Image 1 (spheres, rainbow, N blue to C red):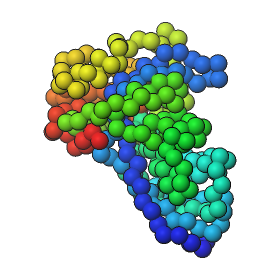
Image 2 (image 1 turned 135 degrees about the vertical axis):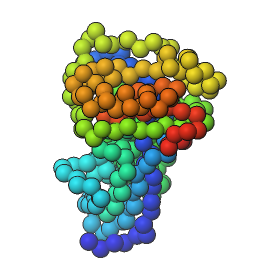
Image 3 (image 1 turned 90 degrees about the vertical axis):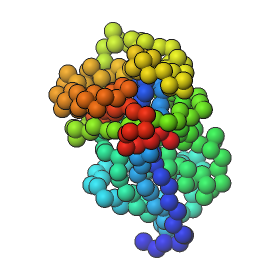
Image 4 (image 1 turned 45 degrees about the vertical axis):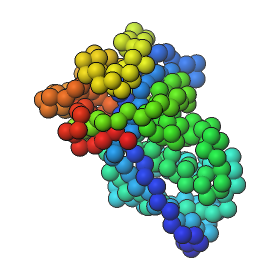
Length: 268
Protein backbone atom coordinates (compact mmCIF):
# COMPACT_ATOMS: atom_id res chain seq x y z
CA UNK A 1 0.00 0.00 0.00
CA UNK A 2 1.59 3.24 -1.18
CA UNK A 3 1.00 6.23 1.06
CA UNK A 4 0.44 9.50 -0.78
CA UNK A 5 -0.51 12.02 1.88
CA UNK A 6 0.50 13.32 5.27
CA UNK A 7 -1.17 11.84 8.31
CA UNK A 8 -3.95 13.55 10.23
CA UNK A 9 -5.23 12.69 13.70
CA UNK A 10 -8.70 12.98 15.25
CA UNK A 11 -10.03 12.36 18.74
CA UNK A 12 -13.26 10.40 19.10
CA UNK A 13 -14.84 11.15 22.48
CA UNK A 14 -17.11 8.86 24.47
CA UNK A 15 -20.59 9.95 25.50
CA UNK A 16 -22.98 9.52 28.39
CA UNK A 17 -26.75 9.33 28.15
CA UNK A 18 -27.75 11.54 31.05
CA UNK A 19 -31.35 10.81 30.07
CA UNK A 20 -32.64 8.19 27.65
CA UNK A 21 -36.28 7.35 26.99
CA UNK A 22 -37.85 5.42 24.13
CA UNK A 23 -41.07 7.03 22.98
CA UNK A 24 -42.19 4.55 20.33
CA UNK A 25 -41.33 2.07 17.59
CA UNK A 26 -41.18 3.24 13.98
CA UNK A 27 -42.59 1.41 10.94
CA UNK A 28 -39.01 0.87 9.72
CA UNK A 29 -38.19 -1.14 12.86
CA UNK A 30 -36.13 1.57 14.55
CA UNK A 31 -37.21 3.26 17.77
CA UNK A 32 -37.80 6.95 18.42
CA UNK A 33 -35.91 8.24 21.45
CA UNK A 34 -35.48 11.39 23.47
CA UNK A 35 -32.17 11.80 25.24
CA UNK A 36 -29.77 14.24 26.84
CA UNK A 37 -26.30 13.31 25.56
CA UNK A 38 -22.96 14.51 26.89
CA UNK A 39 -19.40 13.87 25.68
CA UNK A 40 -16.61 13.21 28.19
CA UNK A 41 -12.81 13.32 28.22
CA UNK A 42 -12.38 9.66 27.36
CA UNK A 43 -11.52 9.20 23.72
CA UNK A 44 -10.20 6.94 21.01
CA UNK A 45 -7.46 8.28 18.74
CA UNK A 46 -7.53 7.83 14.97
CA UNK A 47 -4.61 8.54 12.64
CA UNK A 48 -5.54 8.83 8.95
CA UNK A 49 -3.07 8.29 6.12
CA UNK A 50 -4.11 8.71 2.50
CA UNK A 51 -3.08 5.98 0.05
CA UNK A 52 -3.19 5.68 -3.73
CA UNK A 53 -5.65 2.76 -3.63
CA UNK A 54 -8.92 4.65 -4.20
CA UNK A 55 -11.89 2.93 -2.59
CA UNK A 56 -9.77 0.80 -0.24
CA UNK A 57 -9.71 1.33 3.51
CA UNK A 58 -7.59 -0.62 5.97
CA UNK A 59 -8.07 -0.24 9.72
CA UNK A 60 -5.30 -1.25 12.11
CA UNK A 61 -6.06 -1.27 15.82
CA UNK A 62 -4.79 -2.30 19.23
CA UNK A 63 -7.90 -4.48 19.53
CA UNK A 64 -9.16 -7.28 17.33
CA UNK A 65 -11.58 -6.10 14.64
CA UNK A 66 -13.81 -8.57 12.83
CA UNK A 67 -16.11 -7.76 9.92
CA UNK A 68 -16.91 -4.28 8.63
CA UNK A 69 -16.58 -1.68 11.39
CA UNK A 70 -18.14 1.77 11.48
CA UNK A 71 -14.92 3.49 10.39
CA UNK A 72 -14.99 1.50 7.15
CA UNK A 73 -18.73 2.10 6.77
CA UNK A 74 -18.23 5.85 7.22
CA UNK A 75 -15.61 5.94 4.44
CA UNK A 76 -17.71 3.89 2.04
CA UNK A 77 -20.90 5.81 2.80
CA UNK A 78 -19.14 9.17 2.31
CA UNK A 79 -17.96 8.01 -1.12
CA UNK A 80 -21.59 7.40 -2.15
CA UNK A 81 -22.24 11.14 -1.72
CA UNK A 82 -18.93 12.75 -2.68
CA UNK A 83 -15.94 11.75 -4.84
CA UNK A 84 -12.89 10.59 -2.89
CA UNK A 85 -9.79 10.01 -5.00
CA UNK A 86 -7.72 8.30 -2.32
CA UNK A 87 -7.77 5.23 -0.12
CA UNK A 88 -7.24 5.26 3.62
CA UNK A 89 -5.04 3.57 6.14
CA UNK A 90 -6.48 4.19 9.59
CA UNK A 91 -4.59 3.52 12.80
CA UNK A 92 -7.15 3.26 15.58
CA UNK A 93 -6.09 3.40 19.22
CA UNK A 94 -9.07 2.19 21.24
CA UNK A 95 -9.56 3.43 24.77
CA UNK A 96 -13.35 3.37 24.90
CA UNK A 97 -14.46 -0.15 25.86
CA UNK A 98 -16.24 -2.04 23.10
CA UNK A 99 -19.91 -2.79 23.78
CA UNK A 100 -19.95 -0.41 26.74
CA UNK A 101 -22.77 1.91 25.66
CA UNK A 102 -20.30 4.81 25.52
CA UNK A 103 -20.61 5.16 21.74
CA UNK A 104 -17.02 4.41 20.78
CA UNK A 105 -17.75 2.90 17.37
CA UNK A 106 -20.11 5.72 16.41
CA UNK A 107 -17.63 8.33 17.62
CA UNK A 108 -14.86 6.71 15.56
CA UNK A 109 -17.15 6.88 12.52
CA UNK A 110 -17.89 10.57 13.16
CA UNK A 111 -14.16 11.29 13.45
CA UNK A 112 -13.67 9.62 10.07
CA UNK A 113 -16.41 11.77 8.53
CA UNK A 114 -14.85 14.91 10.01
CA UNK A 115 -11.50 14.01 8.45
CA UNK A 116 -13.08 13.31 5.06
CA UNK A 117 -15.09 16.52 5.18
CA UNK A 118 -12.01 18.59 5.98
CA UNK A 119 -9.93 16.89 3.30
CA UNK A 120 -12.65 17.15 0.63
CA UNK A 121 -13.77 20.60 1.81
CA UNK A 122 -17.33 19.59 2.67
CA UNK A 123 -19.23 21.63 5.25
CA UNK A 124 -20.20 19.84 8.45
CA UNK A 125 -23.96 20.48 8.04
CA UNK A 126 -23.82 18.47 4.81
CA UNK A 127 -22.49 15.51 6.81
CA UNK A 128 -25.61 14.92 8.89
CA UNK A 129 -27.43 12.91 6.22
CA UNK A 130 -24.34 10.76 5.70
CA UNK A 131 -23.86 10.33 9.44
CA UNK A 132 -27.45 9.16 9.92
CA UNK A 133 -26.93 6.50 7.25
CA UNK A 134 -23.79 5.23 9.00
CA UNK A 135 -25.40 4.83 12.43
CA UNK A 136 -28.00 6.27 14.78
CA UNK A 137 -25.51 7.85 17.23
CA UNK A 138 -23.12 9.19 14.58
CA UNK A 139 -24.93 12.55 13.97
CA UNK A 140 -24.55 13.49 17.65
CA UNK A 141 -20.81 12.85 17.56
CA UNK A 142 -20.42 15.32 14.70
CA UNK A 143 -21.64 17.95 17.18
CA UNK A 144 -20.48 16.64 20.57
CA UNK A 145 -20.76 18.56 23.81
CA UNK A 146 -24.28 18.68 25.25
CA UNK A 147 -27.36 18.08 23.12
CA UNK A 148 -30.95 16.89 23.15
CA UNK A 149 -31.23 13.98 20.71
CA UNK A 150 -34.53 12.81 19.22
CA UNK A 151 -35.96 10.67 16.44
CA UNK A 152 -33.77 7.64 15.86
CA UNK A 153 -30.79 9.84 16.70
CA UNK A 154 -30.75 12.16 13.69
CA UNK A 155 -32.46 15.16 15.33
CA UNK A 156 -29.84 17.08 17.27
CA UNK A 157 -30.47 20.21 19.36
CA UNK A 158 -27.09 21.50 20.60
CA UNK A 159 -27.16 23.24 23.98
CA UNK A 160 -24.65 25.40 25.87
CA UNK A 161 -22.27 22.86 27.35
CA UNK A 162 -22.73 21.49 30.82
CA UNK A 163 -19.46 22.08 32.70
CA UNK A 164 -18.01 21.38 36.12
CA UNK A 165 -18.98 17.72 36.43
CA UNK A 166 -16.89 14.57 36.31
CA UNK A 167 -17.65 10.87 36.21
CA UNK A 168 -16.13 7.59 37.22
CA UNK A 169 -16.95 4.64 34.98
CA UNK A 170 -17.70 1.10 36.09
CA UNK A 171 -17.51 -1.26 33.12
CA UNK A 172 -17.98 -4.95 34.01
CA UNK A 173 -16.81 -6.12 30.59
CA UNK A 174 -19.94 -7.86 29.35
CA UNK A 175 -20.84 -6.96 25.78
CA UNK A 176 -24.46 -5.82 25.54
CA UNK A 177 -25.72 -5.81 21.97
CA UNK A 178 -27.74 -2.68 21.19
CA UNK A 179 -30.07 -4.75 19.01
CA UNK A 180 -30.65 -7.22 21.85
CA UNK A 181 -31.32 -4.45 24.35
CA UNK A 182 -33.94 -2.88 22.08
CA UNK A 183 -35.48 -6.27 21.38
CA UNK A 184 -36.13 -6.68 25.12
CA UNK A 185 -38.24 -3.51 25.25
CA UNK A 186 -42.00 -3.82 25.49
CA UNK A 187 -44.53 -1.19 24.49
CA UNK A 188 -45.28 -0.69 28.17
CA UNK A 189 -41.68 0.54 28.60
CA UNK A 190 -42.22 3.49 26.26
CA UNK A 191 -42.60 7.08 27.50
CA UNK A 192 -41.80 6.26 31.13
CA UNK A 193 -39.15 8.94 31.68
CA UNK A 194 -39.90 11.62 34.29
CA UNK A 195 -39.33 14.49 31.78
CA UNK A 196 -39.38 17.17 30.63
CA UNK A 197 -35.79 16.71 29.57
CA UNK A 198 -35.23 20.48 29.57
CA UNK A 199 -35.77 20.47 33.35
CA UNK A 200 -32.95 18.00 33.84
CA UNK A 201 -30.67 20.15 31.71
CA UNK A 202 -31.63 23.20 33.77
CA UNK A 203 -30.85 21.28 36.97
CA UNK A 204 -27.35 20.50 35.68
CA UNK A 205 -26.76 24.14 34.86
CA UNK A 206 -28.06 25.31 38.26
CA UNK A 207 -26.27 22.57 40.25
CA UNK A 208 -29.55 21.23 41.65
CA UNK A 209 -28.29 17.84 42.76
CA UNK A 210 -31.62 16.59 44.10
CA UNK A 211 -33.38 17.35 40.83
CA UNK A 212 -30.57 15.69 38.86
CA UNK A 213 -30.92 12.54 40.93
CA UNK A 214 -34.71 12.52 40.63
CA UNK A 215 -34.89 13.19 36.90
CA UNK A 216 -31.98 11.12 35.58
CA UNK A 217 -33.35 8.19 33.61
CA UNK A 218 -32.37 5.33 31.33
CA UNK A 219 -35.15 3.06 30.06
CA UNK A 220 -32.69 0.17 29.64
CA UNK A 221 -31.27 0.16 33.17
CA UNK A 222 -33.77 -2.15 34.86
CA UNK A 223 -33.94 -4.40 31.78
CA UNK A 224 -30.21 -5.05 31.41
CA UNK A 225 -29.61 -5.32 35.15
CA UNK A 226 -32.12 -8.15 35.24
CA UNK A 227 -30.36 -10.03 32.43
CA UNK A 228 -26.77 -9.17 33.33
CA UNK A 229 -26.06 -9.40 37.09
CA UNK A 230 -22.57 -7.99 36.46
CA UNK A 231 -24.15 -4.66 35.50
CA UNK A 232 -26.30 -4.67 38.63
CA UNK A 233 -23.12 -5.17 40.66
CA UNK A 234 -21.39 -2.33 38.78
CA UNK A 235 -24.34 -0.05 39.55
CA UNK A 236 -24.05 -0.86 43.26
CA UNK A 237 -20.32 -0.12 43.13
CA UNK A 238 -21.00 3.22 41.46
CA UNK A 239 -23.51 4.20 44.15
CA UNK A 240 -20.97 3.29 46.84
CA UNK A 241 -18.81 6.26 45.76
CA UNK A 242 -21.44 8.71 47.08
CA UNK A 243 -22.21 10.28 43.69
CA UNK A 244 -24.85 12.84 42.76
CA UNK A 245 -26.37 10.02 40.72
CA UNK A 246 -25.27 6.67 39.31
CA UNK A 247 -26.80 5.32 36.14
CA UNK A 248 -26.38 3.02 33.17
CA UNK A 249 -25.26 4.82 30.03
CA UNK A 250 -26.64 3.78 26.65
CA UNK A 251 -27.79 0.19 26.39
CA UNK A 252 -24.91 -0.96 28.63
CA UNK A 253 -22.68 -2.25 29.97
CA UNK A 254 -20.93 0.76 31.56
CA UNK A 255 -22.33 2.62 34.54
CA UNK A 256 -21.29 6.15 35.45
CA UNK A 257 -21.09 7.81 38.87
CA UNK A 258 -21.55 11.58 38.62
CA UNK A 259 -19.55 13.97 40.80
CA UNK A 260 -18.50 17.61 40.94
CA UNK A 261 -14.72 17.50 40.40
CA UNK A 262 -13.90 14.20 42.12
CA UNK A 263 -14.33 11.83 39.16
CA UNK A 264 -11.81 10.72 36.56
CA UNK A 265 -13.38 12.04 33.34
CA UNK A 266 -14.63 15.59 32.88
CA UNK A 267 -17.56 16.63 30.73
CA UNK A 268 -16.31 18.17 27.48
